[in-house]
Amino acid sequence: MSTNSVSRIFVIGATGAQGIPVVRSLVSDGRYTVLALSRDAQSTRAKSLLDFGGVSILEGTFADEAVLREGFRTCDGAFVNIDGFNSGERTEMYWAIRCYEIALEEGIRFFIYGNLDYTVKKAGYDSRFRTGHYDGKGRIGEWILWQNETNRDRMGAALFTTGPYMEMALSSRTPMTPTVEDGIVTWRVPLGEGAVVHVALEDCGYYVRWLFDNPERANGMNLEVALEHVKYADLAAAFEKVTGHSAQYIDTPLDDYFGGRLKMVADQPAGYNADPRDKSTMSFRDNFTGFWNQWKYNIIARDYDLLDEIHPTRIKNVEQWLRREDELGKKDGRGSLWERVQPENLQRHSILKVGEDMRQGKL
Ligand SMILES: NC(=O)c1ccc[n+]([C@@H]2O[C@H](COP(=O)([O-])OP(=O)(O)OC[C@H]3O[C@@H](n4cnc5c(N)ncnc54)[C@H](OP(=O)(O)O)[C@@H]3O)[C@@H](O)[C@H]2O)c1
Image 1 (cartoon, rainbow, N blue to C red):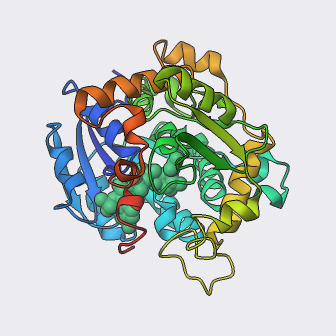
Image 2: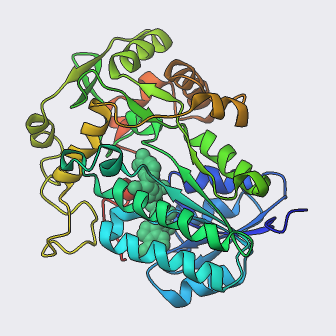
Image 3: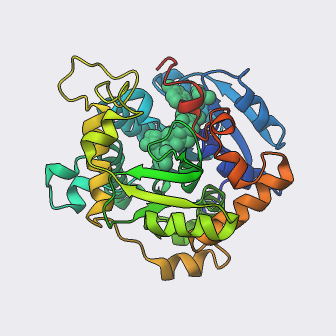
């Protein structure tokens, strides 16, 4: 057995859209147990994790050294997805660094960092692509791999680099929430002819599990995942094919995009607890301008051959994802995709906890 093999994993972000399938996958066969951090152990999402079995909750915040220390000390593995939409970019970076340092100090054997692309660097340091919630993670991701060159035998580390969840294109309170206009499902986003590197949440569970299961190969790895580069004209065409209902993509100028349903948040800090007086705090508008530009101008690449090798049965395209989601929804009572995008149903649920909590909560 590798010295970086682990059995009990401290998960930060466990009740989130990404954390839930990750936790489910880790405990699915009893190979691992999970200690899940949550600010509220009584929330519906925190309680639902307990139903998986093999999960216990540590109540507290990632912005507290004593809490982090307790979580890392009682585990030997860690999956860390710090929520920058709470803290803002600057504070996220500080706590992500402290997580790595405290994990090492407290004896974690394998550390997986929930990462995003370092967009402004990948775009040649062009500020039109500055995306706080990507750059904040991406910088720390590079820093972790750098530390890992020295520390890899004491604590292995890997980056798990994702992208926008495909589920967000069918959910309320996300940057790509659809509307139904004259009976046509419509995505109005500033994407041009570009493509979003969407990920399927279910596959995130598989990939994180694979990283913990294969510590020798995973140590020092940056696993960058996606289902495919999704053009929104293709998303609309696939939706029509799967559901038999009309759908369309309307390329939308940035000013119209931020002047529409996002008007209320456009000038607020991207992180709901970030200080609006701090000049390093990006507004929602500035942050998501860079976000859409990175897709519009195809800044982000993926190695799909590698993903096929690691996860041969992964979801490989948006049509396959929609088909699966349609079937799952019909089976578990959420309804068909067509039913789910109707405004009265859409508003009932947000895939993101931050959407469910309406951008409120303590740091
Ligand atoms: N949306 C996307 O497509 C996407 C894709 C890739 C990466 N990300 C990144 O993922 C992060 C958010 O995770 P998510 O996508 O799963 O969003 P989410 O569904 O909104 O979940 C947020 C998670 O963060 C936890 N959290 C927030 N503040 C916390 C604090 N102070 N202490 C401890 N836990 C805290 C929440 O736990 P409790 O509420 O239970 O405390 C919850 O588990 C962000 O940094 C975002 O940039 C997002």
